[in-house]
Length: 340
Length: 197
Image 1 (cartoon, chains in turn red, purple):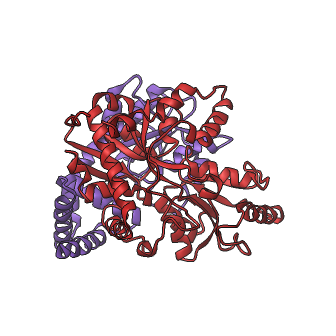
Image 2 (image 1 turned 90 degrees about the vertical axis):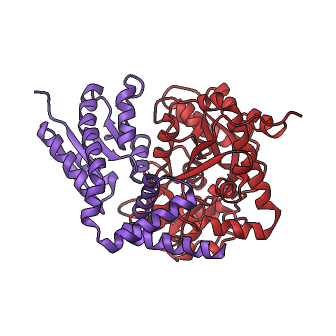
Image 3 (image 1 turned 90 degrees about the horizontal axis):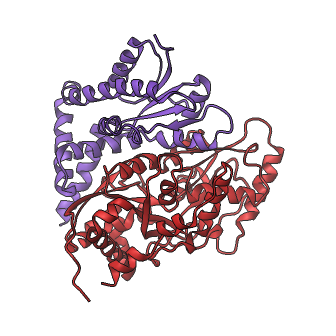
């Protein structure tokens, strides 16, 4: 055992999108786990995944809370110039819900343990079959996201034609509930707390859960560019250890979970626009969100994402390169940081 | 004289948008502005078929634009424009001033770059003007509250003044509120927190 090396960087900035699974970096900052590792970390709230992506790629941010497919999409040069990016730590699993407006979800089941999410998909398909006029508009958060793929799988499970029977688009998470309220969209797939907020405000019903479709699937990761990781290896290790401690602390007692919700309420994190934050039980249905699971990434657990990205690339004559996949989700950085 | 381009400008800073619009129009381009219009961006792009979209980098609408290139089966399919492969200087300037650009397939990069440079220059001069503008527009009392909120954020978030101001602006944008209202909210929460300590 050698003592951890001093981080090369003392001050750094991580980007995040206001979501429940930004909890670990927020806890690490508020409870002092970053400071314990010799890091002064500022958290920068970003308005869009594409902006967060560009800021990480260009070095304006040192790293960020990222959708789990984003580091791979960035490495492959999908939707912007290629930028090799790593996902050395899993920040959360599950938490996505598919919500339909009250009108479209009439007569559908609430999501509980023993409900098959395909039942509601079949009801949606039947309604679409009889529907005349403009197809319903469904939003997800970003093209390369679990939300997009889970929504597609849910629709496909009832043989809904995604090209013709619905219109897909992207909106940032904090805009979803408002867009549904204003009738700009008819449904969405989004991470917590935005799905349960729609239910809380009674503007929509949760008709399927990402955790049912892809159980325990990594939803958010820490993302840093490969060149950043190469330049600041001890800083990365310190970051990983601090986040790991934050996860262990969060899982240690219900009182810690309550304190964490209190921090999430602070500006500029999730703030008080989310009025039901105090009543949230993230690990309960329909979100089944897990913020304290095994944070160690591997390429194998990303197989759902790999499949979708591969399929997408084949449409333009490319294939997913397995070496890029395994570099991106390599557990090596986690192992090195936690075993020294 | 090169062919004029059709530029869609997405910016909720009314003064800045006017500056960019004027500058691009002077170059002979046709500019369509989208401020905080209720129309969806998808529909605007489909209706106007712009050659270039210039958008505030901090706009929450960026993900909508990004997804169009992947999800739209037919034209238009705007693609985010990156000068970074060939032209790191323009890219850095764009990032610093907060300009993002999307182009419709097939447009010559040089022509996009010219439009971007005009936008970058206006965004930059707006940045330096902003402080004075804000002071002129904002009531004294509101300004005091914003200062107080900034101070609390600077202390709590350990950040500098411009960063604290950006946080307030972002919160205001996200919530569609005035910055003064957001400042009140921030003061409310952080003062309670300080009392509790």
